[in-house]
Image (cartoon, rainbow, N blue to C red; front, side, top):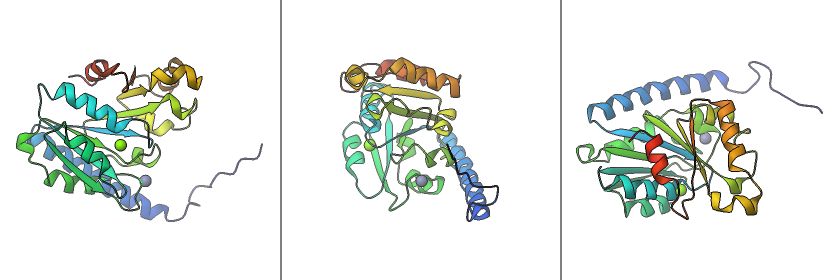
Length: 222
Ligand code: MG
Ligand code: ZN
């Protein structure tokens, strides 16, 4: 089989991109300090469109909301559907509309944080734009990264996205209630994650059946 790969330096604008990523990293560090100063823990939630990020955050917020004050920041191109859904369970919700950008960056998150009353928040869930590729390159300053992947996305979602899984602290394998119908093995996805990132904790979840939620909370260390 013929495979085409770019040579070193062949990708257009690579220097520009490096500057840009460096600036993002600096801003992410500022966000982290800002969050720490306010004693707020932030979790960056990543996953494809339709993997169940919003549903999982809703369920996590229901349980954690008994003990903590929860804020949410939802990233989306143009809509505020997710922030609207999340607003019902959390104390504060901010929508970031990225326009054409397919990921959140530290600068957008910085602006979102300025729109939350952090004195009234203990935990922030940041729902990234639905995409498993470039969010991996843009740290936001969050303390942990939670990746959601569902069995309905097929058997190759983990192996095809090594960068995002390499950075995950916790991986929720969602929609396990549909695993048989999809003929996708949650156990195989868990093994794929372990090969890329032996430190990540993978948890089988069904948001629809409210299964695995407490295990995700425990894996996050609450
Ligand atoms: Mg969503
Ligand atoms: Zn992107």
